[in-house]
Length: 579
Image 1 (spheres, helix red, strand yellow):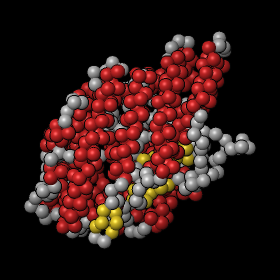
Image 2: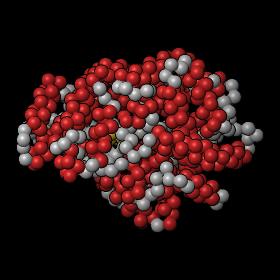
Image 3: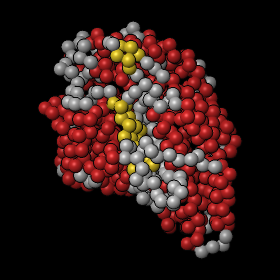
Image 4: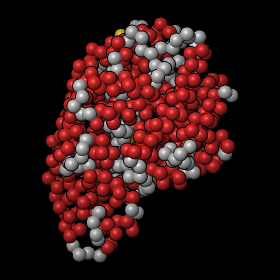
């Protein structure tokens, strides 16, 4: 899982030298001064006001982009530090400051974008950087108004409250003190009793915190609806799509895709779950059985964290394309925070700090096969960012999020030939389970998206009505799921553990769309690995210079919205399961 964070660097040291050789732990940035930033924006507008030569306007836009990068890098660093230790008072204060300043800086940024999408600047921008950035800016303009500045700060407060609440969860289980991410390793335990005990412990925590989670989410939904109404939208759905910068598909395309998942993938998953229960010798498979795929136990990495990093060096050298160089630099400069600990936020993401010249990976390893999946996933993001870090506009350093996830999920599958480094003789078992769990994810990810559409179309719904919405989604997309006596989940509240629903609305379908593309990389690599790798590297180098469908097409992949693509992937996956 990945939280999408954007760009770049704030200032040089006193001697005017770049801080490119600093390690992450020693890296610090001062908060930008609002007055100075506003003054710089006035200067940029003054340069654009002049009846200058085209080159002068291009220079002014470049100066503006540099300023955006500086502000964004400080925000990224602040966010990373907070996620590393949500209990740290200094990091909490810095995060609040960042959240309070962000709408002001966004207002200034949108003001420039409003000018640049109009003649004569529009023609200059399109000629110099291509038309796609204009479409991105139009989304940004359509998703902001000064009237919502206070609402944005309040939204950030609630998102932070959710992050802190989940990070505060502590469990005593089997003699261990565990965080939520650490507890997850027991969800794959070979002993069914232990799996059930771990699921019960998790369920009890969420049930006891359900009133607070309901309060936070209700506040978020009402804030987002209020912002949408202030900006002239019927509800948050349309605004949410603008915030995601979706320029080449819309709500109708996504609804049609969800219907294909329901019709094509859900039946396959029903068969797969039935076979899984048979393999596990279970008459009835319960929700706490689903993470276990093999009666011998899911394969585990053969060593500790240090050993995993040793194996990763060999993997990236074999994969080529410069992945080994990137990983080596990230290790040396402490750009990896992979282990779970008390107070650390859950989840995983990749961010960037370009003044250090490298991306940063945040994760929560727990000793299961998931560690390898998460690691290769986030390294896919990191590699793409590294490949496109020198794009002339910061808007093109990352693509939109569904395209970003193609890089990450693509590397998960393209690294299969190296899995023997981590799993030894169990590598083939790992790959099969990875494929099975990926297919099973498609209906779940689609359910999350459909749920969010229902939630924001009915913003006045009560917590109980939202629980009923999720229960309906499980019946449609996850009809095999049985919660037994886990009353919180049986009552329709499993979704409350899904971070994206709280902090990244409408993001989750992007994982599903990207997975359909990543499966195409998997399929093509079986036929011609060298070509598949070349297409993957080329896609990473393009960054965000084009919209999703164009990027996918350039990599020799078919859009997940194209008729028959999902059905074809399902057919190939089903055939693979039989081998």
